[in-house]
Length: 582
Image (cartoon, rainbow, N blue to C red):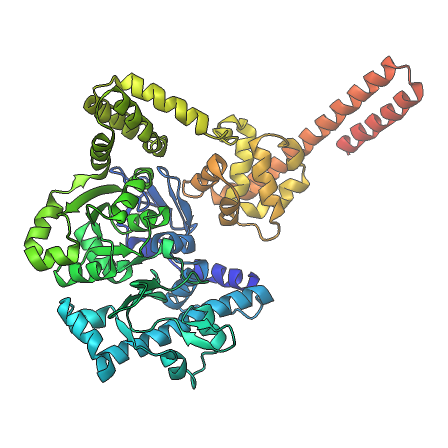
């Protein structure tokens, strides 16, 4: 992807990272550095730092870091290409993809084709729903569900009639080929050749990613037929574990409300919008995933799970508790009366009654505890089982000692068990399950001079090759410093600090990222002089190492009475001394 990488550099040079980030994260200028509350984890004291000159951000709390493109990818859940195109369009940069490899071109072309096919299908199905006499059954159904035309248009709802070839015929004269429809999951291959429409006699909800592109569809049968709900299959652009229906359309409502309500079904989500409770989204008939929770965290600080108490979705929500704890995203639960879902409750009780329920939401960990007590009881055997069930939650909190301690104290009181007992049992489990972390505190082991050299070449990479030629690799050999230097030299001549951050993991990655947002110990006007001093020092160090090795070899040759070797080594030592003098 060389040509796109060149385009990426043009975009990074043109884009103002502070301007881009400040649109979603209020930043304050503190002596040339911009600080704000991190959008990737919950915090009260700003630890999110942006270096405008270097075009780099880093959070000293959760360790997220990167450039303006990676910020767009992480915050808006975009792919690299999507983020690049967005910024390029914003800053008037024309991207050239002519030099992509055949595989890269094919993948990008496929993605564009699938998005184009889905967009064309969305338009066809939506216009059919709004205007065709044959879609009256679908319009009547929406009227019965209380979904007005403005919501139908906002979410671009559509209808696929009871026809095997409605869509494929509509697109016959378009520039969308049949293989694109197949790959997008819009049509299905027949065993004996030909294709038929996947969606028939269904109300369709276009499923949009956070870049505003239609990635797939969710369809509800109108009338008799199975399955009741049908989604687009997994494709190159559609992954139901990473899309929440309505989040793209409702993201401003979510941000304004400061919370996101999660419901189970597409029509529950639409009914909430109609009821002026539009800070809402819905998973696509699947359990909440880590990707879902991470995505929600970018737009809100609190999630409320609104489910029917008997639903499978509620059990899935319970399994998601560790995800919320790990991401430090506040989560609450509201249980509806038996037999109700959000849609039916709204029709029976109205929006004020639902708003009141939402105001009394129970914290998700407390709700989980209540479910465990109901399941196991509070006798001795039940308490043991509850503690065992709480272990995954403790694991999710292992990086936040304060939250973990509060968690243990809270539940030990409710269980009537000494906090030390719970902590001891949970600690054993964490220690058994925890994998060895080779890189823990590696940067703390860096010798001071190693650290100084690494800081210098990371901040001033233009001197990397000069110092490597002077013997830096030999001097820094062994330990964590060598890992960093190896990754740097592996990318010559295309090295950049951002590329290094992407290649490293754990504390080493954090070490480099932090260097890119702090004021360097060596200022730019001192860099050339400092580099020459380092070169001289390295050459002297290399000489001393070679001399020490020769002295060792001479002593060993003396001990073994190898006169010939002694003379050869003495001659080498003489040459070395002469080279130093000259």
